[in-house]
Amino acid sequence: MLLSSTQVADLNRFDLLVIGGGAAGFMGAITAAEAGVARVMVLEATADPLAKVRLSGGGRCNVTHACWDPTELTGYYPRGQKPLRGPFSRFAPGDAVAWFADHGLELVAEPDGRLFPKQNRSSAVVQCLRQAASCSGVTVRTTTAVQTLQRCGDRHFRVLCRGGEMFSAEHVLLATGGHPSGRRLVSSLGHHVIAPVPSLFTLALDEPVLSACSGVALDDVALTLQVHSDRFRQVGRVLITHWGLSGPATLRLTAFAARALRESRYRGELRVSWFGMTPQAELIEAMRQLRRDVPKRTLAAARPWPQRLPRRLWLGMLNAAGVSTDLRWSDCPARVEQSLIQQLDQSRFQVKGRGPFGEEFVTAGGVDLGEVNLATMESRLVPGFYLAGEVLDIDGVTGGFNFQHCWTSGWLAGEAIAAAII
Ligand SMILES: Cc1cc2nc3c(=O)[nH]c(=O)nc-3n(C[C@H](O)[C@H](O)[C@H](O)COP(=O)(O)OP(=O)(O)OC[C@H]3O[C@@H](n4cnc5c(N)ncnc54)[C@H](O)[C@@H]3O)c2cc1C
Image (cartoon, rainbow, N blue to C red; front, side, top):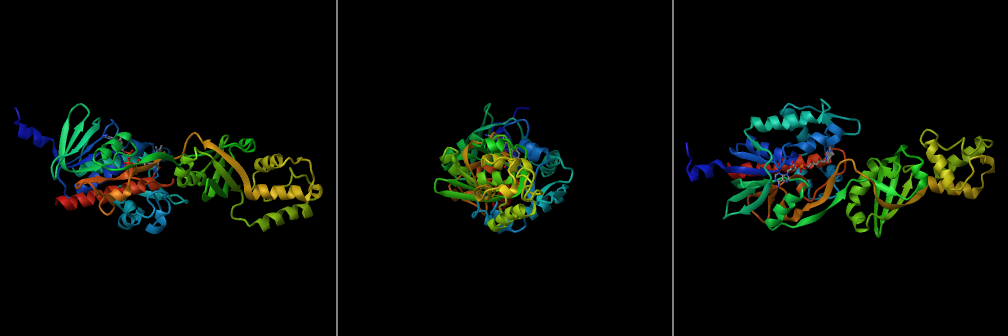
């Protein structure tokens, strides 16, 4: 049977077209469909929707974080901190936990607050989202890359895909993550995109002493990074690597300093307080105690706080201070003791670049938040056009915060689109 041109046009007409089949796009599509929007289609460029969810959290998917207070939650977002207060007061991690439970997926918290699927596999999250999409009647079109997005008249969008296929809809949700094609599409509609820069990376330091301690991890280390006139500080676990520093505190530090570091070409001064939460007076007392209690032992054999200070790091500090490991505590000159206290309290390193990789690969940058109504995720420039997820100038530190803003923005967009249509 041959279809008339009107019937063909009808086949390609939707209430909502979602561009990008990732976390934010699926959440938006499912929310709208469950609220009653009839014809919803997700257009996904690759053959594998939700690929990043599958890859995430080392194959376990850190879905969100057990942080229940919206104001505290915003503190984990170097970009988007203040603007996210409103969205998180509507859909926060507690709502995400309940949403997944309602869709048959239980999330379990680890002692540090990160929430993972009970099955401990990211495929369980992918399966949950795909099933929810299918049950709510969402169509998912894979290997369909959107090339052009046009606004035609007052309430109508035309979407042209690679290969020439065309779709139209009254509402479009763009959720293309950090992909450059998404940024081109939003720019074509007149939006301003803040240039993307890497976030969440490790630091390469010019320091042979540290490379000898590769593999050593310490808790409660205070990091202070000076980049030109900007200063950034984080306290937490660090991991010494053969190229510099990694670990959660380092990743948090580089997330907050992402733009400043980019502008300085990844140069700056890092001060490391290995016992960040310990007052200097206690460090001085620990040294005096060694001198008093074990005067005949060498500096290499007896070190302050042996439970907390790894031997390899202490030997590295002796080496950096030019101190013989055979020196006895009773013979240790005051200036050497002072230099060791200085190393423990304020080791200084020059940052010489980014380390080879981060833990969660997110970009800082994206669509300017001033151009989006964050109560609905609708563009302030183009009515009927919505944005969600990483395409926005929002990014979080590691721990499930990046997915959380995808769930939040996707859900808000889906709700608002449904309210506009029904
Ligand atoms: C290795 C890794 C591990 C991570 N682990 C975690 C974690 O455990 N917890 C956490 O919170 N965050 C994690 N993140 C970050 C998290 O994955 C992202 O923040 C999140 O996936 C962003 O979701 P999104 O839906 O905005 O974009 P994406 O997941 O990137 O989805 C966008 C989709 O749009 C498609 N697309 C792009 N352009 C077009 C186009 N023109 N037409 C059609 N389709 C298009 C893409 O193919 C893609 O499928 C991790 C990231 C990486 C890379």
